[in-house]
Image 1 (cartoon, rainbow, N blue to C red):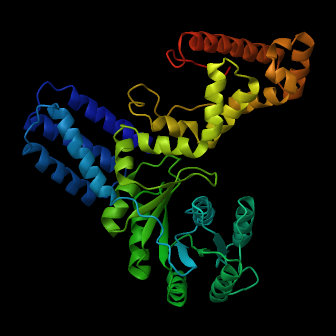
Image 2 (cartoon, helix red, strand yellow; image 1 turned 90 degrees about the vertical axis):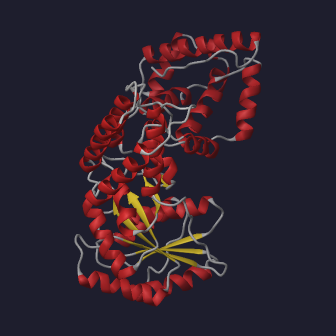
Image 3 (tube, rainbow, N blue to C red; image 1 turned 30 degrees about the horizontal axis):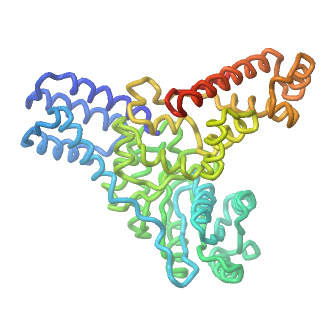
Length: 441
């Protein structure tokens, strides 16, 4: 996320840290470089200009604290101003005491509205609510079918499919939502390849008719300044309550995220960071500012780990490690929990200092997890519990069953035995005193 922007800013800040003494001259040079980086990232020029002016004013007049270096203090000022530009602390959907809460999703065609509807439904469902989906897009071929498929995949009902006109669909969706005891109705709307008056009038009619509790504008994070221009028009006509940035897993330069809140005055509420339905994140300005400056995002990392890792299973695993009884069954369970945390590339970017270590933006071949799982699945229960019994003929059978080579089986077994030996040594001298590593192929 924002890889290019982060790398360029890190380069500027690294040079600033290298200065033995901070002067007005090198502050000016550094901020000029920061301004250039922001403009290259397609940040609105007024936003970039005002940002640099505020940082410069605070940096020049700042008294240096004894506990930090001058460079650290300026970086802190940049972080604070970046957080301010990105908006207020995260605000979740405003759920109404009398259901259903109606959330209307708007934006241009191709921005990822329909997929985001499913992601938002998944996010809301995980928080103990009962979302229902509906689509008033009667123009794009298969738009409503796409939503039905997405809803089916996450066991969330899609309603209003019998009606034809947008207002009729909206009315039917409200009735069906109450009938199904749903408490949140997420309404996908039609988009166009470009702004036109007919589309905006239809959305205005839907808003007037439904009186939605939230209107979220979906902006394609890869389009930069164009997304900001579209947002301004939608704001004028619909007065939406929040912004969603999609496709931030691609080559997004970051300009939309840094400009859209400043230009529209509306908070960024969620970001879409992948193609899977679970690839949705609440937008926390302070965490995003930390990521952009290459300082990681430990809080989000821990939250994802807590969501993915079963506490009871983790405690059982710890007990097995203490007794040096780690098996292939346990290893398979750990792989599955790691995969639940989402893209490992993004998880690495959340680690502080990942950029300085050359890890930021690193491409991890997650297919190796699938390969290991296939090998483990091709073992018998007895072989998983006691890999020592896997002789030559068993290795050949496992290789055929998993689509691997005997060399792959040998490599995995050798690594596994090394890890078991390491665990025994650690447990003998006190659990947790040594670091354990396991490399996949």
